[in-house]
Amino acid sequence: MVPNKQETSHGFNHDSSGRVQHRMPFSHRSLKPAVQPFAGRIGGNQELVLDRDDPENAELLRRIPDAAPLMAFKDGFDLRGFWDVGLWKFGFVECIGTMMHSFVTVWASIHPNSAAVPATTPAGVFSTATFLGPLVGGICNWLSLTLFIFTFANVSGAHLNPTITFGTFFARLISFPRLVIYVGGQTLGGALAGWMLRTAQGSRSFAVGGCSIDTELVPVKEAFVLEFIYSLILIFLSFGVALDPRQGKIYGAALSPFLVGMVLGVLSWTSSFSRIGYAGACKCSATHRAEADEGCGVGPIVSSVGHGIAYFFVPPWGAVERLALLNRKYHE
Image 1 (cartoon, helix red, strand yellow):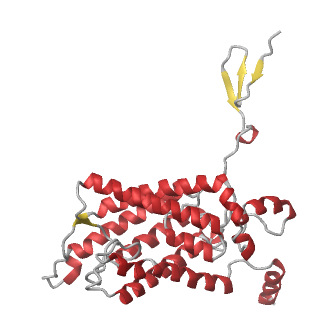
Image 2 (cartoon, one colour; image 1 turned 30 degrees about the vertical axis):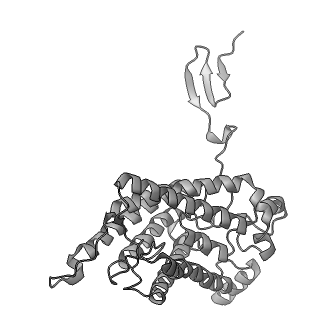
Image 3 (cartoon, one colour; image 1 turned 180 degrees about the vertical axis):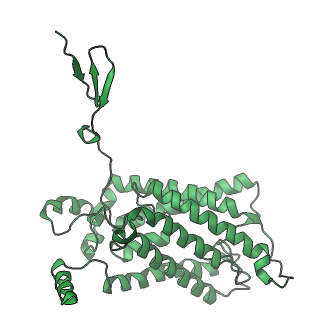
């Protein structure tokens, strides 16, 4: 005797004639989305993290110490993370994401490698390509980074930028092995994007916003100051809108990728037109590369350290007992 209804393993109910009647709830299936807890995830405002004081999380935190915020020094530098296959997979994803994001944003702002033309109208620089080019590039950065964060945040955390990775490391949100693997993947992704850009352009003689500096016009000391302050602003604003657990209660975690994209767009635009010889902040590829590395490479790292110090003294997390006491005093 054949029953009137048969339940299949893939979540559908069939009657005796084989027709689908209804779909079972998603929670009844055998597969679940693979989302690893990770404190340094851009977007989500640290919602997908574990409680470090919960004994049930001890085993997972030994293997993935940055699944909870505010790691101890010894946990952050646990080199066993280099043997975690999952970290290498996430590093590969960072490589792919950085490659695609770098290509699409650079291609949108690519132009012949020529000196800036002085403004000849009463509007000054605001009527020239020196101003309008970065404006278009900033909008492209804003929209594209928003989409890339939505795409990659649940996989690798969507850093897609060594400055963000260093910032989360010095804030004790990611481990040292993850830092090395992610920065390596991002560097490789950027190199692959550069190779594809040269191939697609058919020439090496071109310029893009934010990737050139003439040290004859902008001394290294001045370039360092510009890189430092713009990187510091990038880190503080990105943490404020995408990594602060208090903000998720205000505007929701789904809005943070949009705001991080806005941060990058505004900074890449406003840093690109005020100083002749300086095409914008972050990851410069200078005319005199060895000299410019001091400003373009060291500036973001120093700003990451500065933000890490501020994050140490004013963390977004606090002990439950102390917060309850402050809350009672506030309402008295």
